Length: 186
Image (cartoon, rainbow, N blue to C red; front, side, top):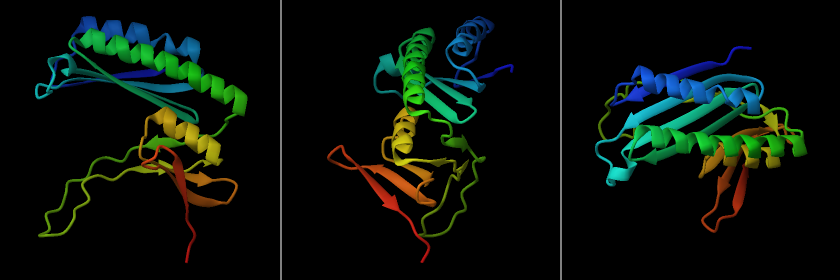
């Protein structure tokens, strides 16, 4: 299966040299991980960054059958930011493969982002400015915790608990431990 690599630039032009460099390096992901469907590279220039060393941002998202891996790094040069995020993604793939091998993780969270919706202006009422839809794949609490950490979600993670047949919310508590909200229909 051919991996689709997509490169996006925000506040900067993606030169042919950068595109070739990024594409050549991301092809190496296929050696480490099978079933990759898409590799998305987001490169950005933030002119309002407080520190000049954080002006260039590189985010790599790998989507595959049953998994999503994401990394983000910042640097003072575009290629340095990409190299840092590439190295971080390589470590994350090794960690993911190790956990998947130990736990026989077969089905994990799949994120399919919905397009952004223009906010409606209503006086003095909260407004929903973004909506996301995602498929809930049955998983255990341990698998949900692993997926939460692999995605870099630090506050919460919504998943379908295969053991209880209910939607649960895993969240990080202020003391660094985790909590679980179990839902039920009233």
